[in-house]
Image (cartoon, rainbow, N blue to C red; front, side, top):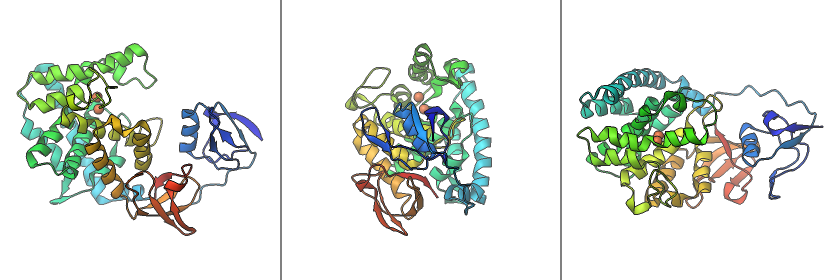
Length: 355
Ligand SMILES: [Fe+2]
Ligand SMILES: [Fe+2]
Protein backbone atom coordinates (compact mmCIF):
# COMPACT_ATOMS: atom_id res chain seq x y z
CA UNK A 1 0.00 0.00 0.00
CA UNK A 2 1.34 3.47 -0.82
CA UNK A 3 0.10 7.02 -0.36
CA UNK A 4 0.29 8.97 -3.66
CA UNK A 5 -0.34 12.57 -4.62
CA UNK A 6 -3.46 12.81 -6.77
CA UNK A 7 -1.28 14.38 -9.49
CA UNK A 8 0.79 11.15 -9.59
CA UNK A 9 -2.16 8.77 -10.00
CA UNK A 10 -2.37 6.69 -13.18
CA UNK A 11 -5.36 4.95 -14.76
CA UNK A 12 -5.39 1.30 -13.73
CA UNK A 13 -4.21 1.87 -10.13
CA UNK A 14 -6.50 0.40 -7.47
CA UNK A 15 -7.72 2.42 -4.47
CA UNK A 16 -6.69 1.00 -1.10
CA UNK A 17 -9.32 2.91 0.89
CA UNK A 18 -12.57 4.80 0.41
CA UNK A 19 -11.86 8.27 -1.04
CA UNK A 20 -14.01 11.10 0.30
CA UNK A 21 -14.63 14.67 -0.86
CA UNK A 22 -13.70 17.45 1.58
CA UNK A 23 -17.38 17.72 2.55
CA UNK A 24 -17.34 14.03 3.53
CA UNK A 25 -19.19 12.54 0.52
CA UNK A 26 -17.86 9.21 -0.76
CA UNK A 27 -16.24 9.80 -4.15
CA UNK A 28 -14.65 6.45 -4.95
CA UNK A 29 -14.95 3.24 -2.93
CA UNK A 30 -11.99 1.10 -1.84
CA UNK A 31 -10.91 -1.46 -4.43
CA UNK A 32 -11.87 0.64 -7.49
CA UNK A 33 -9.64 0.56 -10.57
CA UNK A 34 -8.99 4.22 -11.36
CA UNK A 35 -9.78 5.66 -14.77
CA UNK A 36 -8.62 8.94 -16.28
CA UNK A 37 -11.95 10.62 -15.63
CA UNK A 38 -11.99 9.42 -12.00
CA UNK A 39 -8.55 11.02 -11.49
CA UNK A 40 -9.81 14.26 -13.11
CA UNK A 41 -12.79 14.14 -10.76
CA UNK A 42 -10.49 13.73 -7.70
CA UNK A 43 -8.46 16.71 -8.90
CA UNK A 44 -11.63 18.73 -9.36
CA UNK A 45 -12.65 17.93 -5.77
CA UNK A 46 -9.23 19.01 -4.47
CA UNK A 47 -8.40 15.56 -3.01
CA UNK A 48 -4.66 15.88 -2.26
CA UNK A 49 -3.62 12.23 -1.79
CA UNK A 50 -5.01 8.74 -2.29
CA UNK A 51 -3.94 5.39 -0.81
CA UNK A 52 -3.23 2.88 -3.57
CA UNK A 53 -2.80 -0.92 -3.29
CA UNK A 54 0.38 -2.65 -4.46
CA UNK A 55 -1.57 -4.74 -6.97
CA UNK A 56 -0.15 -4.54 -10.47
CA UNK A 57 -2.86 -3.27 -12.85
CA UNK A 58 -3.69 -5.90 -15.47
CA UNK A 59 -2.50 -5.17 -19.00
CA UNK A 60 -5.32 -3.66 -21.07
CA UNK A 61 -7.18 -6.30 -23.03
CA UNK A 62 -6.78 -6.23 -26.78
CA UNK A 63 -10.30 -5.44 -27.96
CA UNK A 64 -12.14 -4.67 -31.17
CA UNK A 65 -12.00 -1.05 -32.39
CA UNK A 66 -14.17 1.46 -30.55
CA UNK A 67 -16.95 3.38 -32.28
CA UNK A 68 -14.71 6.44 -32.55
CA UNK A 69 -11.84 4.35 -33.95
CA UNK A 70 -14.23 2.98 -36.56
CA UNK A 71 -15.25 6.55 -37.45
CA UNK A 72 -11.57 7.56 -37.76
CA UNK A 73 -10.81 4.60 -40.00
CA UNK A 74 -13.75 5.20 -42.36
CA UNK A 75 -13.34 6.51 -45.91
CA UNK A 76 -15.93 9.15 -45.16
CA UNK A 77 -13.74 10.52 -42.38
CA UNK A 78 -10.58 10.53 -44.54
CA UNK A 79 -12.40 12.60 -47.18
CA UNK A 80 -13.84 14.92 -44.55
CA UNK A 81 -10.47 15.49 -42.90
CA UNK A 82 -8.81 16.42 -46.20
CA UNK A 83 -11.53 18.92 -47.14
CA UNK A 84 -11.63 20.27 -43.60
CA UNK A 85 -7.86 20.95 -43.52
CA UNK A 86 -8.03 22.68 -46.90
CA UNK A 87 -10.97 24.79 -45.81
CA UNK A 88 -9.23 25.88 -42.60
CA UNK A 89 -6.28 27.17 -44.64
CA UNK A 90 -8.54 29.19 -46.95
CA UNK A 91 -10.61 30.47 -44.02
CA UNK A 92 -7.46 31.56 -42.20
CA UNK A 93 -6.35 33.68 -45.18
CA UNK A 94 -9.77 35.26 -45.61
CA UNK A 95 -10.17 36.11 -41.92
CA UNK A 96 -6.62 37.45 -41.51
CA UNK A 97 -7.10 39.71 -44.53
CA UNK A 98 -10.39 40.87 -43.11
CA UNK A 99 -8.88 41.85 -39.78
CA UNK A 100 -5.56 43.23 -41.01
CA UNK A 101 -6.28 44.66 -44.46
CA UNK A 102 -9.99 45.49 -44.31
CA UNK A 103 -10.54 43.50 -47.52
CA UNK A 104 -14.07 43.04 -48.81
CA UNK A 105 -16.07 40.18 -47.33
CA UNK A 106 -17.61 37.49 -49.53
CA UNK A 107 -20.10 36.04 -47.05
CA UNK A 108 -21.81 33.73 -49.55
CA UNK A 109 -18.53 32.19 -50.72
CA UNK A 110 -17.36 31.59 -47.17
CA UNK A 111 -20.67 30.08 -46.17
CA UNK A 112 -20.82 27.86 -49.24
CA UNK A 113 -17.29 26.54 -48.56
CA UNK A 114 -18.10 25.83 -44.92
CA UNK A 115 -21.39 24.08 -45.62
CA UNK A 116 -19.86 21.90 -48.32
CA UNK A 117 -18.08 20.08 -45.46
CA UNK A 118 -21.44 18.74 -44.33
CA UNK A 119 -22.07 16.70 -47.46
CA UNK A 120 -20.31 13.95 -49.41
CA UNK A 121 -21.71 12.75 -52.73
CA UNK A 122 -24.86 14.73 -52.00
CA UNK A 123 -25.44 12.86 -48.72
CA UNK A 124 -25.22 14.60 -45.35
CA UNK A 125 -22.66 13.17 -42.93
CA UNK A 126 -22.67 12.89 -39.12
CA UNK A 127 -20.80 16.09 -38.45
CA UNK A 128 -20.68 15.67 -34.66
CA UNK A 129 -18.81 12.36 -35.01
CA UNK A 130 -16.48 13.83 -37.62
CA UNK A 131 -15.65 16.85 -35.46
CA UNK A 132 -15.05 14.67 -32.42
CA UNK A 133 -12.22 12.98 -34.31
CA UNK A 134 -10.79 15.64 -36.54
CA UNK A 135 -9.76 18.21 -34.01
CA UNK A 136 -6.19 19.32 -34.07
CA UNK A 137 -4.00 19.70 -31.05
CA UNK A 138 -3.38 23.40 -31.79
CA UNK A 139 -7.13 24.03 -31.66
CA UNK A 140 -6.69 27.39 -33.36
CA UNK A 141 -9.33 30.09 -33.44
CA UNK A 142 -9.92 29.31 -37.15
CA UNK A 143 -10.58 25.62 -36.50
CA UNK A 144 -12.81 26.41 -33.55
CA UNK A 145 -14.87 28.97 -35.53
CA UNK A 146 -15.50 26.46 -38.32
CA UNK A 147 -16.50 23.79 -35.80
CA UNK A 148 -18.90 26.13 -34.03
CA UNK A 149 -20.38 27.18 -37.40
CA UNK A 150 -21.01 23.53 -38.34
CA UNK A 151 -22.50 22.75 -34.93
CA UNK A 152 -24.75 25.86 -35.18
CA UNK A 153 -25.93 24.64 -38.59
CA UNK A 154 -26.96 21.24 -37.22
CA UNK A 155 -28.37 22.87 -34.08
CA UNK A 156 -30.60 25.19 -36.10
CA UNK A 157 -31.96 22.13 -37.92
CA UNK A 158 -32.88 20.64 -34.54
CA UNK A 159 -34.60 23.94 -33.68
CA UNK A 160 -36.51 23.76 -36.98
CA UNK A 161 -35.20 27.14 -38.10
CA UNK A 162 -36.01 28.44 -41.56
CA UNK A 163 -33.26 28.29 -44.20
CA UNK A 164 -32.60 32.01 -43.72
CA UNK A 165 -32.32 31.64 -39.93
CA UNK A 166 -30.05 28.63 -40.39
CA UNK A 167 -27.80 30.68 -42.64
CA UNK A 168 -27.60 33.43 -40.00
CA UNK A 169 -26.87 30.92 -37.22
CA UNK A 170 -24.04 29.37 -39.23
CA UNK A 171 -22.50 32.78 -39.93
CA UNK A 172 -22.79 33.68 -36.25
CA UNK A 173 -20.72 30.59 -35.41
CA UNK A 174 -18.19 31.31 -38.13
CA UNK A 175 -17.41 34.83 -36.92
CA UNK A 176 -18.08 34.56 -33.18
CA UNK A 177 -14.42 34.58 -32.08
CA UNK A 178 -12.99 36.82 -34.79
CA UNK A 179 -12.04 39.28 -32.03
CA UNK A 180 -9.47 36.77 -30.74
CA UNK A 181 -7.30 37.73 -33.70
CA UNK A 182 -6.96 41.17 -32.09
CA UNK A 183 -5.65 39.66 -28.82
CA UNK A 184 -1.94 38.88 -28.40
CA UNK A 185 -1.07 35.44 -29.84
CA UNK A 186 1.13 34.75 -26.81
CA UNK A 187 -1.93 34.87 -24.59
CA UNK A 188 -4.29 33.02 -26.94
CA UNK A 189 -1.79 30.19 -27.45
CA UNK A 190 -0.41 30.07 -23.91
CA UNK A 191 -0.38 26.39 -22.93
CA UNK A 192 -0.43 27.11 -19.19
CA UNK A 193 -2.98 28.60 -16.81
CA UNK A 194 -3.74 32.27 -17.55
CA UNK A 195 -3.12 35.08 -15.06
CA UNK A 196 -6.01 37.38 -14.19
CA UNK A 197 -4.57 40.10 -16.47
CA UNK A 198 -4.26 37.63 -19.35
CA UNK A 199 -7.79 36.39 -18.84
CA UNK A 200 -9.04 40.01 -18.81
CA UNK A 201 -7.19 40.57 -22.11
CA UNK A 202 -8.92 37.51 -23.63
CA UNK A 203 -12.29 38.80 -22.50
CA UNK A 204 -11.71 41.83 -24.72
CA UNK A 205 -12.26 39.61 -27.77
CA UNK A 206 -16.05 39.99 -27.56
CA UNK A 207 -15.95 43.76 -28.01
CA UNK A 208 -13.06 43.55 -30.48
CA UNK A 209 -15.07 41.11 -32.61
CA UNK A 210 -18.09 43.39 -32.59
CA UNK A 211 -15.92 46.32 -33.72
CA UNK A 212 -14.24 44.38 -36.52
CA UNK A 213 -17.60 43.13 -37.83
CA UNK A 214 -19.11 46.62 -37.60
CA UNK A 215 -16.81 47.65 -40.46
CA UNK A 216 -18.73 45.30 -42.74
CA UNK A 217 -22.23 45.15 -44.08
CA UNK A 218 -23.19 42.05 -42.15
CA UNK A 219 -26.35 40.91 -40.36
CA UNK A 220 -26.63 42.52 -36.92
CA UNK A 221 -27.20 39.10 -35.31
CA UNK A 222 -23.70 38.12 -36.46
CA UNK A 223 -22.22 41.21 -34.78
CA UNK A 224 -24.30 40.56 -31.66
CA UNK A 225 -23.19 36.92 -31.49
CA UNK A 226 -19.55 38.08 -31.47
CA UNK A 227 -20.36 40.56 -28.72
CA UNK A 228 -22.65 38.42 -26.55
CA UNK A 229 -21.58 34.79 -26.87
CA UNK A 230 -20.00 34.84 -23.37
CA UNK A 231 -23.07 36.37 -21.72
CA UNK A 232 -25.16 33.99 -19.57
CA UNK A 233 -28.91 34.17 -19.00
CA UNK A 234 -28.44 34.54 -15.21
CA UNK A 235 -26.27 37.65 -15.71
CA UNK A 236 -23.00 35.90 -14.79
CA UNK A 237 -21.35 36.31 -18.21
CA UNK A 238 -19.28 39.03 -19.86
CA UNK A 239 -18.64 41.71 -21.20
CA UNK A 240 -21.81 43.37 -19.92
CA UNK A 241 -23.44 40.84 -17.58
CA UNK A 242 -26.62 40.85 -19.69
CA UNK A 243 -29.61 38.71 -18.68
CA UNK A 244 -31.74 36.32 -20.74
CA UNK A 245 -34.09 38.65 -22.62
CA UNK A 246 -31.28 41.13 -23.37
CA UNK A 247 -29.13 38.54 -25.14
CA UNK A 248 -29.47 38.04 -28.89
CA UNK A 249 -31.11 34.67 -29.60
CA UNK A 250 -28.32 33.67 -32.01
CA UNK A 251 -25.67 34.53 -29.40
CA UNK A 252 -27.43 32.10 -27.03
CA UNK A 253 -27.11 29.34 -29.61
CA UNK A 254 -23.45 30.12 -30.21
CA UNK A 255 -22.77 30.00 -26.44
CA UNK A 256 -23.96 26.39 -26.30
CA UNK A 257 -22.18 25.29 -29.49
CA UNK A 258 -19.02 27.09 -28.32
CA UNK A 259 -18.87 25.28 -24.96
CA UNK A 260 -19.73 21.92 -26.54
CA UNK A 261 -16.92 22.32 -29.08
CA UNK A 262 -14.37 23.37 -26.46
CA UNK A 263 -15.19 20.42 -24.20
CA UNK A 264 -15.38 17.71 -26.82
CA UNK A 265 -12.19 18.81 -28.58
CA UNK A 266 -8.88 17.10 -28.01
CA UNK A 267 -6.32 19.10 -26.04
CA UNK A 268 -2.58 18.61 -25.64
CA UNK A 269 -3.21 17.54 -22.05
CA UNK A 270 -6.41 15.49 -22.50
CA UNK A 271 -8.53 13.42 -24.85
CA UNK A 272 -11.94 14.75 -25.96
CA UNK A 273 -14.47 14.62 -23.10
CA UNK A 274 -17.24 12.04 -23.59
CA UNK A 275 -20.49 13.77 -24.75
CA UNK A 276 -22.35 12.32 -21.73
CA UNK A 277 -19.81 13.91 -19.40
CA UNK A 278 -20.25 17.22 -21.27
CA UNK A 279 -24.00 16.97 -20.73
CA UNK A 280 -23.44 16.22 -17.04
CA UNK A 281 -21.24 19.32 -16.79
CA UNK A 282 -23.98 21.47 -18.39
CA UNK A 283 -26.48 20.03 -15.90
CA UNK A 284 -24.14 20.52 -12.92
CA UNK A 285 -23.36 24.09 -13.88
CA UNK A 286 -27.09 24.77 -14.13
CA UNK A 287 -29.01 24.90 -17.37
CA UNK A 288 -30.65 28.15 -16.20
CA UNK A 289 -27.46 29.85 -17.37
CA UNK A 290 -28.63 29.05 -20.90
CA UNK A 291 -31.88 29.64 -22.73
CA UNK A 292 -33.85 26.53 -21.74
CA UNK A 293 -35.61 26.38 -25.14
CA UNK A 294 -32.20 25.96 -26.75
CA UNK A 295 -30.19 23.98 -24.25
CA UNK A 296 -32.82 21.25 -23.85
CA UNK A 297 -33.19 20.75 -27.59
CA UNK A 298 -29.42 20.67 -28.00
CA UNK A 299 -28.73 18.19 -25.21
CA UNK A 300 -31.67 15.94 -26.13
CA UNK A 301 -30.52 15.70 -29.72
CA UNK A 302 -26.91 15.01 -28.78
CA UNK A 303 -28.02 12.25 -26.39
CA UNK A 304 -30.53 10.78 -28.84
CA UNK A 305 -27.83 10.39 -31.48
CA UNK A 306 -26.21 7.82 -29.15
CA UNK A 307 -29.34 5.68 -28.68
CA UNK A 308 -28.47 1.97 -29.28
CA UNK A 309 -24.78 2.84 -29.05
CA UNK A 310 -22.55 0.60 -26.94
CA UNK A 311 -20.92 2.31 -23.96
CA UNK A 312 -18.41 1.57 -21.23
CA UNK A 313 -19.46 2.42 -17.68
CA UNK A 314 -17.23 3.72 -14.88
CA UNK A 315 -17.53 0.38 -13.01
CA UNK A 316 -16.17 -1.51 -16.03
CA UNK A 317 -19.55 -2.87 -17.28
CA UNK A 318 -20.50 -2.50 -20.94
CA UNK A 319 -23.88 -2.33 -22.61
CA UNK A 320 -26.20 -0.60 -25.07
CA UNK A 321 -28.10 2.62 -24.44
CA UNK A 322 -31.75 1.59 -24.72
CA UNK A 323 -33.65 4.44 -23.10
CA UNK A 324 -33.03 8.19 -22.75
CA UNK A 325 -34.33 9.70 -19.51
CA UNK A 326 -35.70 13.07 -20.64
CA UNK A 327 -35.51 14.51 -17.13
CA UNK A 328 -31.91 13.36 -16.60
CA UNK A 329 -30.21 13.35 -19.97
CA UNK A 330 -26.72 12.31 -18.88
CA UNK A 331 -28.19 9.21 -17.19
CA UNK A 332 -29.78 6.89 -19.77
CA UNK A 333 -30.73 3.26 -19.11
CA UNK A 334 -28.17 0.71 -20.32
CA UNK A 335 -28.79 -2.96 -21.18
CA UNK A 336 -25.74 -4.89 -19.96
CA UNK A 337 -25.18 -8.67 -19.96
CA UNK A 338 -25.72 -8.54 -16.19
CA UNK A 339 -29.13 -6.78 -16.57
CA UNK A 340 -30.57 -3.29 -16.97
CA UNK A 341 -28.70 -0.39 -15.41
CA UNK A 342 -30.67 2.82 -14.86
CA UNK A 343 -27.99 5.46 -14.33
CA UNK A 344 -30.48 7.79 -12.60
CA UNK A 345 -30.48 5.32 -9.69
CA UNK A 346 -26.75 5.40 -9.03
CA UNK A 347 -25.15 8.81 -9.28
CA UNK A 348 -21.64 7.38 -8.72
CA UNK A 349 -21.96 5.40 -11.92
CA UNK A 350 -21.56 7.13 -15.29
CA UNK A 351 -20.72 6.55 -18.95
CA UNK A 352 -16.98 6.70 -19.35
CA UNK A 353 -16.76 6.41 -23.09
CA UNK A 354 -18.64 5.34 -26.20
CA UNK A 355 -17.34 2.03 -27.52
FE1 LIG B 1 -15.31 33.55 -27.42
FE1 LIG C 1 -15.48 30.38 -29.04
